[in-house]
Length: 200
Image (tube, rainbow, N blue to C red; front, side, top):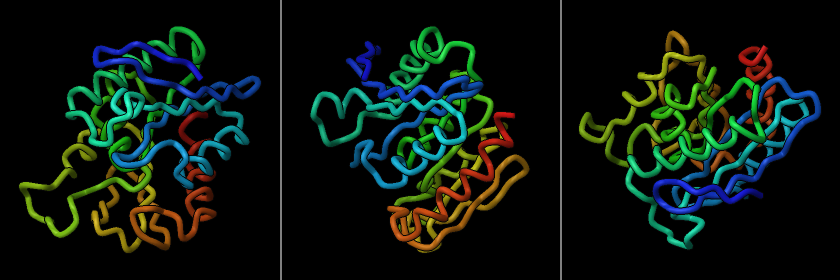
């Protein structure tokens, strides 16, 4: 575990290096949960099994013990600072896949250019708040703005909505809801199929 200073307080990165890795997956957590979410743990293990190094990022608000997420601009700045630190050191020379679950997926999308990512992995992207499927609350533009190869793994009954596939975007529909706990094996299988294709 590495503590990294950001413009909004210290963040933490839990780095799991894979021998002879050519790529790295850097993932952030959801709004209310940490890095122990089942899908994050399972995808992290699968990436390492595929020879991809993994860094799991705890945002400064979580490190400080706060439950409410920081504003989007602060989350993005902190994530960029962590990635810059990692690519200059622990993950130097590796092709970067940015990712996260829910809130962390939104951060990965918004910062994909700034972090120099080659692809984006979204676990349970929150298209809209539950019950607010209207243009004002729609977050699909954040996903549509990503021009890199993107995989969204989404529960078929997710109250946060189901994003459509796009020119660069694959959507893997799995059983369950926003927690992606019902069929973790299906989540892992989708990542196993996609990740080697985008990191070469």
